[in-house]
Amino acid sequence: MVRFLAALSVIFLAWTTGAAAADIPLKSFFGKFRGSAVAETDAAKKLDFAMRDLDVTISPKGDGFEISWTSNQRPIPGSGNKVSKRENDVAFLAPNENGVYKPEQQGDPLTGGNLSWARIENRTLFVHVLTIGERGAYELQSYARTLSPDGNEMKLLFTRYHDNERVRQVSGTLKRYQ
Amino acid sequence: MKRATIALAAIGCWLALALPAIAADLNIKAFFGKFTGSGIAQSEDSIYFATTVRDTDVEMAPTPDGFRATWTTVLRQGGDPSKPNVRRRSTTMDFVQQPQLNQFKAKPGEGIPPGGQAWARINGNTLTVYIFSVDENGMYEIQTYARTLTGAGMDLTFSRIKDGEETRTVKAKLSRMAN
Image (cartoon, rainbow over all chains, first blue to last red; front, side):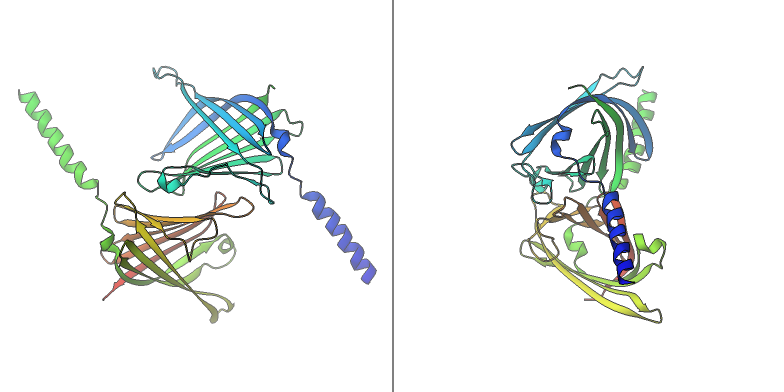
């Protein structure tokens, strides 16, 4: 009976550990990706959709990495608006023992700075940025970038929270071009 | 001329209607005092199990550079339904006035997880306390206590968000106690 239970435990352990996918290494994300996404904005309970063209570059920096990305929002046809371009760049140092990356100098959101960190879970690189606005409300931006098994495609899910409310979500697919 | 007069009158009416709607932020002094009441907590687990009732009270008092908030929660959950287990949890935090009139920064100490930070702001009739932290695995948690002054006392809405998921909310009504 004891042998049977022991065998059962081994089978259970092998099954559960096999099911828990390992986190892929940081270097899997290095490269340049380009694609498009749909932005869904919930401003004052009025849903708004917009197309965006995205470009992201992830490169090694010391034992950490640097990530820069641009987002070009296409104008709604007939609106007369121009393309709105946003650029961001963040560098993260070597991770701690639990795989959490932080920038060299962490900002203080209470004095207008950004508090940011990153981590990898399974095939997804998460980057979070917390800021606090002039009125004291917080804004949290979360970028989840998931690589396909062959590493040539990246799914992006961006979410912006304003004071516990999800006010924007952007989802899209990018292709590796370098 | 007549058109201009009508237009001016219309603008005047619009301003009269719109301005009272833009409520000014209360002064922190309005929140000083002791409030007591009870509320209902809902957590992820409570989809399958009963929501829990909790008694809660909060006391806010001035300090030389800001204010001190002490809140106590009495939870009744688990054990015999006719005689549930009782747990009492109390937290005190000191907040320092920031250059912006409606904002306060918490002093390091009790109630703030290691590496975390806490602040408070007044928006209209509501004083909101935020406690933000990132654990050693990079998972974040943000707790917000929104306390809104009402004619009868105070409405409290507590919310806990873990990595984008709302894991607990508490809604409570409190009455102001006589000094």
